[in-house]
Image 1 (cartoon, rainbow, N blue to C red):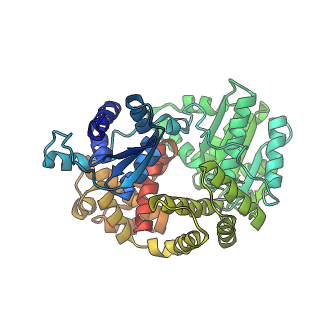
Image 2 (cartoon, protein in one colour):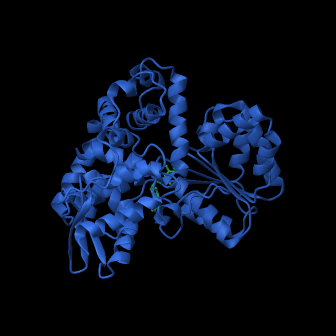
Length: 463
Ligand code: ADP
Ligand code: MG
């Protein structure tokens, strides 16, 4: 089969599985450059599309190719123009542009490949299956918390209730408590495990009050066999919530049902936490997570690289582990940058290359720290104009990118809600808050969105 025909047949297959805008967005201007000794080289218009196709559609493309041409065993992507630019899309340029604008805005969910779907949050428990003990590295910084977790799994509801885990940002609290939930479920199939962040819990209470569904909500949490509440420090902000949680706590406690709570600080350091809750928390087991030492940081990096299936020279891992001390999430972030930039330049990872990226990464907060950069990245990614983004149009095409821009400004720059509102045509701070929370919430259940944001951030970083 001719290369051109082959690719058109592949596209025909893939098109069936995707929404039209999505298909156009990612497969426009692609082609097969060569098929040589079982390796198909697919050309894509830019590094961005390359990254996306590689991560997301690699399997779909390979299986479509193999069905048509069984000798193909591997597919690689290269940034290049297809030789014969084919006109497979009957849409006019204008239609195409309009569709492109919708890019990734909608239609993404439900079409993701199994690899991503597997990682989706379980709607029943709200647990993310990606958090397991298998890839949780234990060192002196977290061994107390880890040991307490194991005891709780062995004798839930009796030894340590609640188990209260606290520690700084990005040090593995969420990972650990979700791993407990997943493990508990494995050991006790059919049991009712509920994981909730205190922010989500608060939202649920507000909703339930509005819709007069408070009893159902009470039932949802009071019938749990294991209740996990993440980031409880935020709960202390409202009385109503503390009140509600207090009763839930007691109900579960009386039934010897295990509770696990996380916080960024110990109970006595949460200023507005009610006394009665504080004393209950302190009556359980308090376990802190400290800072990982160098060996642990190195080991974490090594494991993550292995999981990703990439080879990184040890001295490169050493420099990353030496440079980033306080936050495991950042450690992973640095590793991801190194892997991505090697992928984009199609070169193996070298010590020098890794160091260069690391320097950039460490400088990135400064580099990143401008609303301008965020706005520019958003307008480019979603192909909307700055004017549409910043002014008051309510069209769906603009609302979503705007919400994401607001989210990023809050998340990455820690800008205040009112100041973000000012940048977007003097919007009220509550609008900004709402946008932020909406995206933050969706991030938890939508791996596509997480990916999308990562790509937007990488764009800013790699430019
Ligand atoms: P926190 O909830 O304390 O802010 P997270 O649990 O979200 O932190 O952890 C941040 C990132 O670091 C996650 O991707 C998590 O998987 C990873 N991580 C944290 N602790 C460990 C560990 N001990 N071993 C491996 N990965 C870890
Ligand atoms: Mg967390």
